[in-house]
Length: 535
Image 1 (cartoon, rainbow, N blue to C red):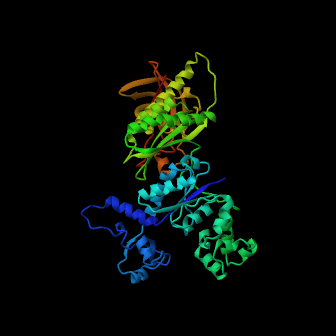
Image 2 (cartoon, helix red, strand yellow):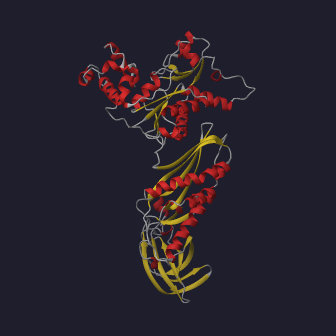
């Protein structure tokens, strides 16, 4: 059975503002209104009509009778000493995403609350994971305690559906224990809650009140088709859909903030780890657990991420990648040490560690000859690339790869060596030199016009007479590039030539007589260049 935990972050924008002010507050500066829980405080925002309304309130402001969505002018008339500051929804969203990542200590699948009228919250898919925390009630208590330690007021509930958990977290008794409801009692527990617990908009709620519908249980005996027709517009259809989602008759998809890894190993600690020695001491157990899970399914990891969950609500992580899929714990440990465990920012300590395989591939068993030197060299090279990339960084260990371009200096580029195996070479490598001059070097050549091969050329102050020549190989500007770029690269005629001393060279003439050069003022005459030396 699916198990969903809904976490309601009460007054989340106010909590975010208070935490940011606490970090920046100087002891000698005057106190901020948001830092005093006894003073009514509100965050304001402009609505669609341009009016300034209350966006979020602290408990003191709510106790004074103010409500979210109320105009600021009306609120100040009721409470002249109300302290107001403009809200920053973008900062609240960023903080909520960071909190969702921190909440992955309880579930690999954490989603943001998508409901339009329910203030900020999270959904945690804890299916099959409740026993890891001593049961779902212990899990909910732990979530509330950890958030309270961070200064965040929250309530939580567990149910088989996101809609059911959302309703119970917000509308159950705030002084009672956190609700944990199974499928058999979900219908009964939701029946006593108001219709607002179905995540309906204001228009649908207003129409429902006109029909005398106050609680979710009032809808149970009503036919679905007739109920939907009673409402104007799409309000009735939305009400029926939300009811079916809450009861589990219709599925509801949740989109995690980060895609949950298929394979992960996780440990929580009663006492926070405050130094890197403690982290390194527990890392072998994590890699052994993860390697065992991969071996069971015939998979190997190419990307691993070690995440530490800090006591102050933040996270710190360190990632490694390998060129080939593998599951050797000793190799992973060495790579993490090479990458530098000192990059982890522990803060005041971390109370949980997670090792996740972000990218996995099947590992096929293969049998090689006892003296397969090529295979051993390939494995040794791959291990060396892995270690150098972990120590120096992926962007510092590069390998060449081909690019779709017929201009020689553009036909290859450098990429991280861990990005994958390069594509096989195409064409006849014997017609071109392995090593090119970058940039090509100028040459003074004597050749028969307009398209003849050079009869003599001077390169690096030495004059050479050509006794054999092969060509031309014509390369035109690439038509898909911008016009300005095409003008900088003119047509080239490449020749392979051999001089009297037996030296073989790869030269080209840039520009064509008669078509790209007519002798006019400002036009560039064709020129000769040395691009490489043939073996």
